Length: 131
Image (cartoon, rainbow, N blue to C red):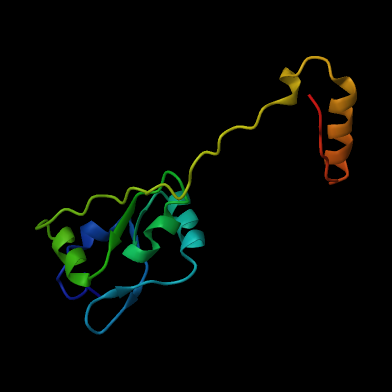
């Protein structure tokens, strides 16, 4: 609608997908189902413009350029070159967990390692006790 009414140049929207619910006040409200849309935008190598509330979810699709906005006026100013909205940087919803110790590094203890393998294969609990 913005390009059709001449408020935004059509060229600016060529590689962009926009998601969000537009309120009558111009506020861009959050939506559901952002992750599948983000994955599709990443596959198509497009920029995704979404409500600011949904930005962290969209960043789950790594390698996607996400622009988060909360009002339509921000978007119009961005596309007309009056302001620059920097791509959203994830605050760390995705983090790399610390690696667990690897049993291949344990020397000896063949009976204990066998008990661990059997317990893991059968989804059983196991408690080791001792020095």
